[in-house]
Length: 495
Image 1: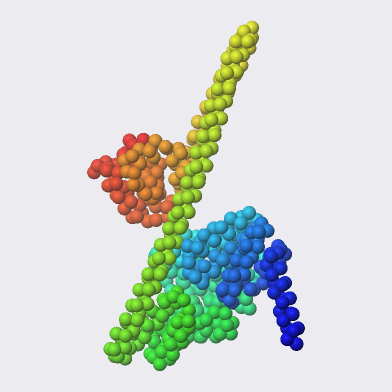
Image 2: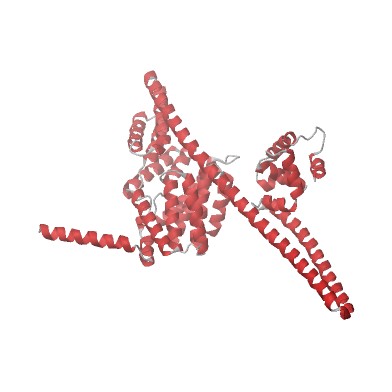
């Protein structure tokens, strides 16, 4: 019996080793992608390891679908599990490129949504809201009805989150309506759903002081998570603790808060937010009970966890924003480099053509003196062609200006680079006066050069009129514009 056991074990390791050497075929990769084992909520570490395995196998096979799918899961893992938004953005950008290569609309849609959630977590709520609204319009490309419902549920959920951070702040009733839409979408696919949205609905009934419905949905959420055994319910326990504190049931509140902390302490530092919130509720309860020692104790604990949370959060946000800025700058540099190459190539082509034509005509005039009249006619035709080319060039400059105006109105990322190409002298003189101008300050100067009003600049760049007026006042100081001088006149005189 023992011999048989060891023999089977040896066979297993031999087959495993041979599989590792041979790698995975595209068929095997497709089979793994269709399983639920890639869900980060079931077993995060296992799904992450499997996604990496699929990635390396797909890279070896030059299989773009496998690369795109695995990078999406890897990006999601860094965002949802590790809260490492910088790495998540990097994997998202790389995966998006592979999804573009295979023209997979559904996968591109998921990548776009993922970037919207990351922008929201980093505080770019206006951008994230535009992304979510665009994605909602495109969900028809998802053929699987349950997957579509799950995706729409996520879109409504994250839209409400970004909306809650925008200005002016919407009412709790508006946010509740959006969360109910998300919950209704989730309930169409409860058998595949990780989070049915009951928690958010319960929280916003709590904000509206409808405690009965709040208690119903929060308990329903906790029961769902226990049944699924996929996601723990520490958030629901925290919310139920707050609810019972608000309604004066302090003993029940303590039980829920204790349960929440028990789960939180078993998880990484990312749960510091909940622990801090729980300690705040402990402190509030003991304040009502008049227990001064407990008040001081939990106030210190709340502050300690708050400090750790703020430090971690700020570091991650700073790194992620730096990544976004560096990537945008790099993209702009590549665009400028390519544009310069095209212009240089065009100029060289025209010069070489001109030189060759000149040589040709000179030699023709020397060797074919008897055909001077014919050559003169050809020369006249050539001059006419050059006149047509000059006219076409003038039209091209005019159309380039119109295109620049369109780019400015749409706040196109290429606007800055295109403007510098059309107005090189203006840009050079601007930098001579103030070399330290930021990209945003340069952009405002470009809009002023194009005669955009303060209101138009604000509309194009999606900021307030007051913000643009503040930037114009700052520019006057930075560019040493004398008092009383109209900034538009000064810009015109500069060129």
